Image 1 (cartoon, rainbow, N blue to C red):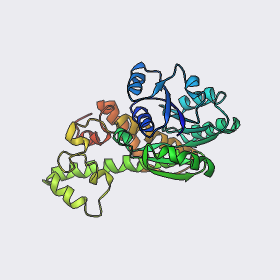
Image 2: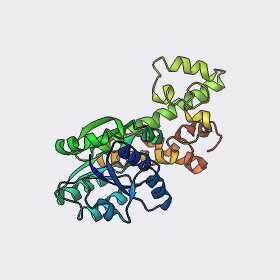
Image 3: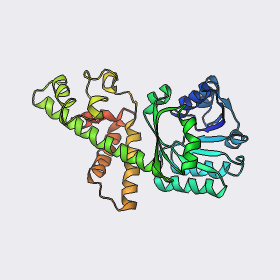
Image 4: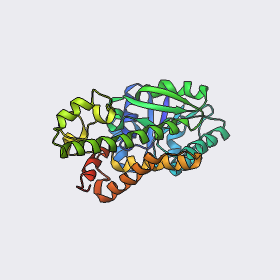
Length: 294
């Protein structure tokens, strides 16, 4: 079993760290928020006084942080104190350029590294069923995979440094665009006199089927586990969807890729967030499309 430093014990990091403990790993954690540390401690994580203290003696360092600048700051701080042969894994969702800069920090310190953002939300983190999209060398991926399997169900090597982040933002651009399309379809169906169930029964088994309908239908009824049946309490908040869509647009601009639907989805989610929807589930954008605000 590995000795793991886990830095960033928020809504995603805490259950991920807890699953590492359940798998038998020794986990030392650090977070700036005292409440997060208390939750982690109750889950069997030993709490360090600083990121550097958590990393001391660790075989693996996992970060789950809000943005690229935080990842670069933490990796820059702790790479110098990490032990020889340590593996760095970043499961934050950040821009591709920052991910590649983080890999460079690790490489300069002669350490292995993997960018491994996740899909599956808080529910997936708690259940240990996350999907990890990984970028890095074959050697680093092979070293990271057994640990990631304690926290996730599907572990995919997407290629070189930064490609995990590239896969994540491409996937979430599809998700953002498709949820808007599904919301528009249900809005139109309502105005044409279709029941939610009737449209679901057709679209979920026909050419319109997609995850946004079949697994996460944005109207109450057809999919009991969807947030629409719980007042759009977030499984994946609209603010996070906007963050990912913005990252996709930054990457598209940098790469010279045309993503007109991605750009429009980012604009609509920005409006939805501004109208009060930021802390609700991203599927709640159907309410904005109906003219109900956030």
